[in-house]
Amino acid sequence: MLSSPSADTDDETYSTWDVAAHGPEPRPPWVVTALAAHDTDLGVLKTGKEADVHLINRAVPQGPSMLAAAKRYRTSDHRLFHRDAGYTDGRRTRRTRDTRAMARRTEYGRDLLAAQWATAEFAALSTLWSAGAPVPYPIQQHGTEVLLEFIGSEDGAAAPRLAQLRPSAGELPGLFDQCVEAMRTLARLGFAHGDLSAYNVLVNEGRIVLIDLPQIVDVVVNPQGPWYLQRDCENLCSWFRRRGLESAEYEHLFGDLVAEAVARW
Image 1: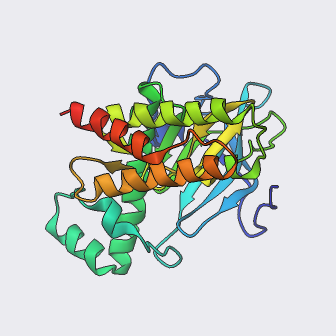
Image 2: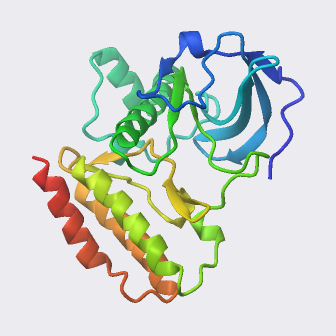
């Protein structure tokens, strides 16, 4: 459920479309790009250690509107960055000063990390959406905020996570096949989700959508890439096996995905 917007913030602001980085084209027709649009914060969809997700209504007065999910990475005073090192191995910044600041977790370095993770997620979603992966459309990035397609109903009810569902025996194979195909799409591009579980998969009207991708890992470039991919496979297959899908075997899936990723090179 949504929580109420904070009382000490302005709940409505002008659209930041003109100063933001935009998502890939062809752009879905529902995206509101008019500079006259206003963004209204309708409340918090999810809170996390690294970011909070707000439900936003972007609307032109007496004109078109859209619901969107605004993922706002935390500032240096509140963000933990407790698991950066393994995921970011292989990522580089051109400025030595910035690299040192991020490694030492200074206030400046933590601010850089917040922006880096927002940029990483926006770039990953743009690549994956263009490749046909089941991910939210990345509408825009402005600083440490990534504005995403809202996955849910028109009344603002978010789609449930796979972990919240109790699929029937007849529904399990189809959901598993969709997850596997999504992982194959990532692997063909050389990627592993990096933190995949039933909590990072939405199910909207029977279709799965992968979310939470700032930690996406290059399976070949990152020395720990194969380990992250194996963990993704184990997490996903274990969830389905616990619910009775005996065909969800992670060893077989892991081997197939490694072959997909390596074939890219």
